[in-house]
Length: 460
Image (tube, rainbow, N blue to C red; front, side, top):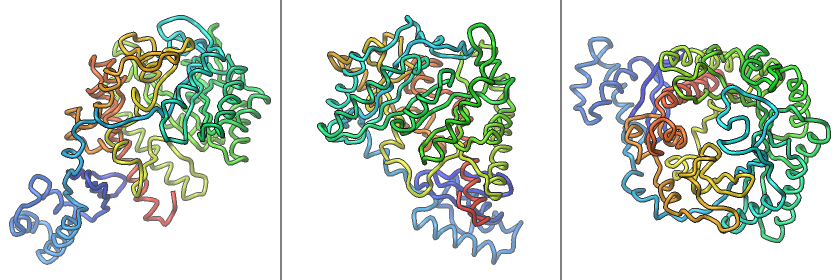
């Protein structure tokens, strides 16, 4: 499969199965287009169909170049994975990451919150040290020979249970030498409770910090107020600026993570607002919500959203050339390496390699399934009891989703989010159509940015 498109003055051809990207002139672009339906189309037929627009000698030369790329497996490559990866259920997996729901409680009242202000369709609760300790033991015991393990402190708002966070990090560090493991800790916070002590601890112990901020003051305060209705922007932004500056000085990772909704379809301005505040590691996710929610993304919003991605991409190129660039999570594509084949096909590993743990120790496939008893896998005391659910998640890949077979972006999104599929279709191996449309656009923009910076001789 070859995907062709025009973006920002570039003619781009992506060979899906080889991952090769070609920036071409109009003639080569048209020759490739003629071969898309039938790569074995006779040369003379291709030449005859294109010659009306270009000199014959030029067409023959262009076709020769295309045939060379085809011979080298860089155009119209064959899918070599479909036949060799038929039954993912047989693949041995180990648990390598936990999302610890350290607090099912929150001090904000975000309108779009899938976790119901931290309650997750259940009750407010804080994880005890004893439950968290058992969770880390479970992770170590089920990680096999894998050395690097990941733990994300999540909520609700995890800083509402900060002492237990500190204690669990200390316990994890005590296991590292004994068990020959290394923990990468991450925390996701709304910033309300941030102070110097917490920043110092996180800078010493957290490999990454995710800071939740939705954009300009009016955008953020509309969706992320306190429970009394007052906005939270003015309180948290100075804290986030200080935190980010400290982490940058130490060479530590962080990123600002926002959510855009139907209310701020001009979200590119919110991302640029982040950059203007001094943040340079950014993410902005489209809200996923029931179709009848007033803030939900609607199918008719897609053209506007795609235009915003184009605006953002062009501005990112301009700023990178000026030496003040920033990263945007959804535009970060590695065209030379990237994830292993299994990850490209199966995605995030939810339900198999990645699990969520509730404050009382129940195990779920990921944080978005927490509270849905159909997906209760077991608990940290007894381990995984529902291996049938794990097997179902093992088989959730780009080949189990029929829509992925015709999608050029399948190796970048790996089929999308199982939770979104469940919420919209009642099954985990379908697709969330709006998410698919936006992912395709983001991949196109990401590739174009690579092309534009390479063309300008700028490393981005």
